[in-house]
Image (cartoon, rainbow, N blue to C red):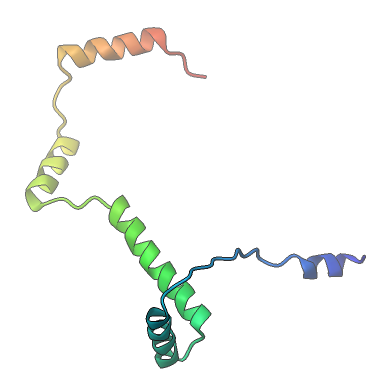
Length: 100
């Protein structure tokens, strides 16, 4: 087998996803795909991708109120001095944990 043939055979991998849905839902999805001018498969993939990205973003992004945002910025710009417990914890960590 020549090198060009091997390159031609290496396509991006895809995986199969199957779902059984009630006929009215499939008809609705098919109608939506038709209205968008795409195949049912392309419509389902694009829609699932969009919704999945939104769900992941909703769970990964932290939304703060104006008050919380101001408190966070203040703490970052002028952090409080470490109290006794934190100072002891840092010393204990340095004593017991080696890095590298």
